[in-house]
Structures are given as C-alpha cells and as structure tokens.
Length: 428
Image (cartoon, rainbow, N blue to C red; front, side, top):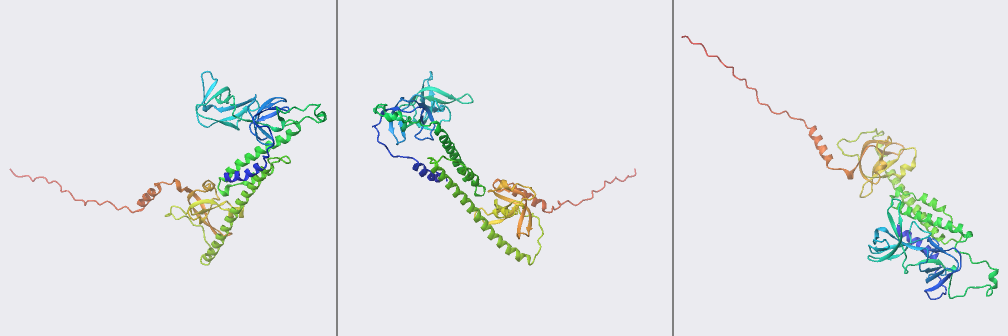
C-alpha cells in the first residue's frame, strides 16, 4: 500500500517541478546576491527549511544550476552540518571528531535551524574526521548532535532569481534609466508573499501527516478501517491558487476516495453473502417449524467442550439492520471462512469485541430470534483456542473418573475366635 501511495504521488511532484534549464555560465562560478534577506535553504524547493539568509551584494560560489529557479552553492556563513552524537568520537580538545560508522548522515543546520534536522547534506564513513564547532544538548542534558563545519563538497541551495554571475556587470542608473522607475526585485519571501508561502507549508505538513495515517489505517482489518475521517480532513486542506503542491493534494484525495470505495465494496459484499445465508437459514427453519413450531431456549450440551468454534468477526448485516439490537458477531471456519453461527452478549457477560479476529471457543445458551428466523448463541464464556493447553483433557478425564461407580473393596469373612478353656480340677 505504501508503495502504491508513493507511485500515485510521485508523478504529481515531478509535474510540479520545472526542469527547463536556462543558459548560465559554466559552473563553478562566483555569484552575487541581488536581493535582501534571501534565504539559503536545505533543499532546492520552497518546502525545504531555510538555514540562513544573505543580503544584497553577498558573495556565493555557484557549483550547479539545477533549474531556472534553483542554484546549488557551496556552504556560506551561517550554514552548518550536524551529525548524531552516537556516531562521533571527539578528541580530547573537543575540536576534531572521528566518524564511527559507515554511511553516517550529515544533516543541514544553520542560524535559522537549530532543532529538528531532517534534510541530509551527504554522508561520511568510518574514520573520516570532521571539525566540531558546537553541540546540541537534549532536555535530559545529554549531547544529541555535534555541530560541524560543513565540508565544501556539500551543497546548500538558493533561488536563482536573486543571484547573478559576478562576471555580469551590475545595472546602473546610467545604463538602465528604467531602473529608477522600476522597483527593485523582491526578495524570496517579501511581506506580500509571506502568507501564501506559510499557507503552502502548513498544507504540505497536513498532507504528509495524512499520508502516515493512511498507512496505519490500511494495516487494520477491513471492518475496522475508517477512511471517512481522513477524507474529511483532506478536503479541508486549502492551498493558494496555482500552488505547486496542488497536484500532490489532488492525488492524495483521489487515493483516499479509492480506499473509501474499496472498503465500502468489501462490506457490501459481506452483507450480500450474509443475506444469502440468511435466506437459506430461513428456508431451513421454515421446514423445521412444520414439525416443531416453537423452539424454546436450551442449555449447552455438557458433553461438548464448546457450542461454537471458529474465528470471530463483526456481522455487518445484523449490526446495521437494527441499531437497537445488541451487536451480533459471526463465527467462521478458519480455513474456508464458512459461517458456523452467530453469537451475541446482550447481558454483557463477555466482551466479544476483545476477541475479533481470533480463533475462539464459545459456550452459552442457544435462543431463537423469530424476527430474523435465526438461532443465536447467547455467550456465557469465550476461550481463546490459541492459549489452550492440555489442561482441559485432564479435567475431563478427572470428571469421567468421578462419574464411574466405585466398587466396594473386598473384605475377608469374619472368623469367630475360639474362647480359651480352663483346665478341669483333679482330685488329689
């Protein structure tokens, strides 16, 4: 599902990116900033967080022109890198750090970004040495990140609209009389654009959060999925007109609607299957009524371990048919998914919802619901078959032994002991 989601969103992202390359000097070349408060960012797009900002006439070294909108530049003042503290071994002076693993990420940081470092600048491997210029301490007082001077092979990004080649002569009032009448080029985010840009970023964060919720919701059983709430929140996301994130939002909405339809179709199919089984049961019970018009409740067979055995799931048909009735569940065979019977707990003796999706054995009283012509098991106890041990057969064996009549032990016949005789007196 996650792969499918990425596949849906990726074309929208690519279509929103302008890759038309403009003519530019051969890189690398020196550049001059032409605006004020121009952001240097951690990635070549407006969604990447800024790390610092430059003023008019500041110098940069352009290493690549990525598009008509973005330039990759070498690190400038105010740009830093951070590495997770668990992968850095500082020396005794705390000035040089040695990397302790391979493929360790160096993430973008700077004067404007001192927490939540997401965007990577590059990687370093075991044994590489970096210059330590600071550290970031967590709320527990432990060092979480080491701040390093970013190596020159790592790149930051700036808007191409506010950088010209140092080899190009700057326009002067004499060379361009119209310059006196034309307002200066705006910086990357002037006050008039601040609100739309902020709105775009908030919308993008909301879209990313909904994508994570989609993955979590799709991992649940079908009867427990709820995409309607996600769809409702996605419809409330508002983007500025002609926003570059509009294709992403559109693809997300389409995907959620497809998932809502899929869940509804699955539940509809289940209701249809249960309706067919219900009709068959009605015909069977109608035939039974001709010989036994009334069926009174009966107790469980004491010789059987359980009255119903199988996998418990929610019955979509009887739950939705009458909300005033207790919630009913269906028991199916684990292999063929055939319906074994229906069960409810109207008196709340057991919490059947705790056993949904599990293989169980249920004991209770069988009742007859004339309104739907179906037998329903009123549950008294539920046992998880996966947790059963050999204890049950042992108890049954003990019960069988108790039930057998006990024969009396044979006794020896009583023999009357002879009485002692006194000797007769003799005459002298």
